[in-house]
Each structure stands twice: as structure tokens, then as C-alpha cells.
Length: 247
View 1: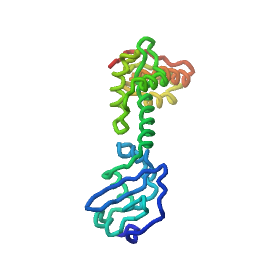
View 2 (view 1 turned 60 degrees about the vertical axis):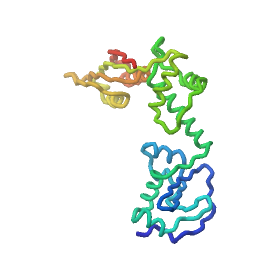
View 3 (view 1 turned 120 degrees about the horizontal axis):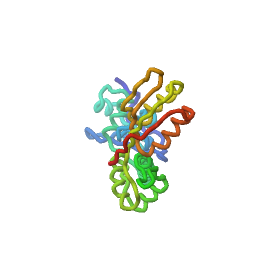
View 4 (view 1 turned 30 degrees about the horizontal axis):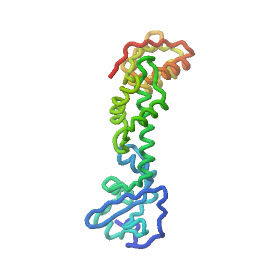
């Protein structure tokens, strides 16, 4: 099956600013594609990223920086009758993503922000039972000189960083188990909140149409959760803390 290539040709010189190259060397041949660095990196980490957000085009090059396209014969010899899109995904999965130092630092910065968000959401100050401000968390992480690894999962790094933070600030990883009773008039808008904020452990519909539920949420979400429940029910819901589960 043809792939739309006419042989190894020289294309116009490619503008690589803000872009990255993914390179696959196999069967004695080299194949390169132009990609957007962040979605390409996220895709390789297993994130659900639309393929069309990754690639500038599905054109396969032998040497992208010189604008030299791969020949159709080489593409067919290695990839058979795969479509252009399938070839691009295969190269991205199996190849080497070339990131500049600046791109790595930018991804690392975004990863640090995600880690701060995770800790803010899942931890509290045990002295006040309130979330720890994000700016305080970020400053503490920077002061500790923590090396953020751009290719390791947020959750894994966050849990390691929480251990490092314990000697320098009051912090506790905690989830909260809450009992919630919603009056009949407000179960509709609030039911989605219960399912979206945490793990719904138990639900029971009473004869009068009220909903009684038990939900477990990250401790950092408790204040926002209570505020949303009370706002949507005009203050008529009842919420009780059943248990605090610390790690």
C-alpha cells in the first residue's frame, strides 16, 4: 500500500522552534517525525492524548533537520502496509524523543506544579486540619532542592516528597470519610458532586426521597466539598465526619 511518498526527496528546511524530533533507528534505517514536545512526552507516559495534537504532519523524514524525506521503499520495507498515522504512532512509541534542555526544564516545571497540586489536594496541616497553601508547598520543595524527575509519575514523586517535607513543616497525608444527607429537592444537582469528588462508598435512598451517602475524599478537598454541597442545597444538607484516615 502506498503512503503518499515519492522517494527520498529534499523538502524545505524545517523550522524546529518550539518543536521536537522523534527518531527511530531500525533495520539500518533512520526515520524521523516532527512533534509537539509536551503532548508527545505525555503520550509516551501513557496519558490519553489525541494523536493529532502530537504531530505537525505524518510526513516521515530520514533527516528532518535537513528536510530529507524517507523513501517510500524504506518505509514499506520496515512498516509494511501500516497507514501514515499508524507509522507515526509506532515511531513515537518505539523511537527516541529528542528534547532540548529548555523543553525538559519546562516539562519539569509543569510536573512540579502537578506535584504541588497533588500534595495540596491530599495533605493537610495536622495542627489546623486545613489544606497547605500551594505557594508554601512550592517554596518548601524548591528550598529542599528536590530533583523533580520529568519522566516519573506525579503520585510516586509526590509521596516521596511528602516524606521529605515532614521534617520542615507540619504535613499529613489524609483522606476523610464523610456521611452526607441530601434533602429530596437537591439530590439531582448534588448526586453528580458525590460521584465526582471522591469514592462513593455507600448510598441509600430514603422513603421521603432523601439521599444518605458515605463518601471518602482527599482531606484537602473537604472544605471545597462542604462549600459546594451547602451552596447547591442552600445550606439544607447535613454532613458529618465519620473518620480521618492518615497515612
